[in-house]
Length: 295
Image (tube, rainbow, N blue to C red; front, side, top):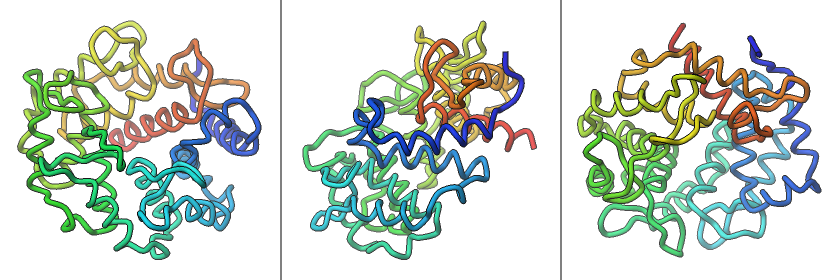
């Protein structure tokens, strides 16, 4: 069992993953490379190794993914724009302190144009609605200092309409509570100054029940297996509502460390599976949250 974070091996794993563009894993992720870039780059930043990559190359590639007429960003060059990839692009530019190269008016107008009459947000022109998109739109516009371009009151009302009797939130009104959706809804409410809509004790209890007694890991909803990525979704939500002290942090740390590939680096969803960039990012991010709170 691991007793420390193999930071150097994780850095090598991320840097090598970017070079394997012809691998099966890389090809099947081609359409969401913007997300993968954000996960990998943010992990490097958390490990103080962002300087290991060429800033100019990354920024140049990001800008090739912007849709000229729509203003939003795609998951890769030549793909259609989506609000998810737009946030990742903006976050990458923010990592490198390069937001100044953006046409903020164009990007913010693209995002604002995705808000629906009921306050919800579609992910793209095809109209799928999800509270993930509400958070993404609000987060992105907040970074760009353009929240005044949307109807924040309606956006908040829609999110509140997705709150359930167990204190959690779903992807749409009446949908099952899920830790990922809870992070999105609580995060959006926090950014807009509306956390008073959250029953913090009730939601805190639901989130703490996501911890598996045996492994110490966290799941996303009842009767599901623990998964490293929920170390971020659950812990960050608990921090936002000031209830992170209700959970057994030491067991979460052990679970994340046990999911490391001790030879080649990277972190998996659970100790029995293969590693990937997504879980490497959320594992390191989860540990960073606990380190921050403990300090």
